[in-house]
Picture 1 (spheres, rainbow, N blue to C red):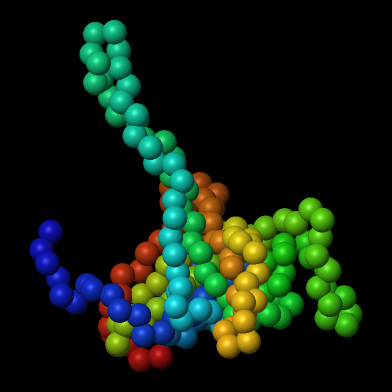
Picture 2 (picture 1 turned 90 degrees about the vertical axis):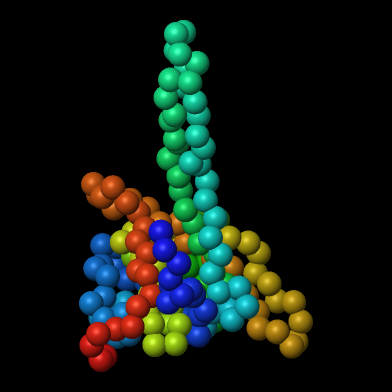
Length: 185
């Protein structure tokens, strides 16, 4: 693998989107199709954090061979995002897809919340280069308590996005390496 100075990443801006499960990756990342809805204002400090569970390697032995084979358990990735926008859509992402929004726009928090399942997309720009992270199916739900810390900072709705396998796919997540688009939006 050669060193590639063009492959470093320094985000200039980014946007998070959701769409119905199975929605295809936009042909033009700078102009997603109408099925994609922007999630709203998000943190400039903690843009996106990644975590994973599983993926442990185990050495399997036989009576004859102590290091016979290596087995790796399934790995689940998740991403943390912090939204600053408090509206019915984002509150439902936080409190669950079964939260009820009344005719007056009040969000009623369920006792048995259910995560929201959607397609998820994070589009980022680095200068003229555009890239992203995409899941055809993802589970979105609160990741921590709401943070309303002071009068000089924006309040935070912390969410966890867990990409899920759709149908018979062999993957649950796609990275789109940043590159300069060849067509104009």
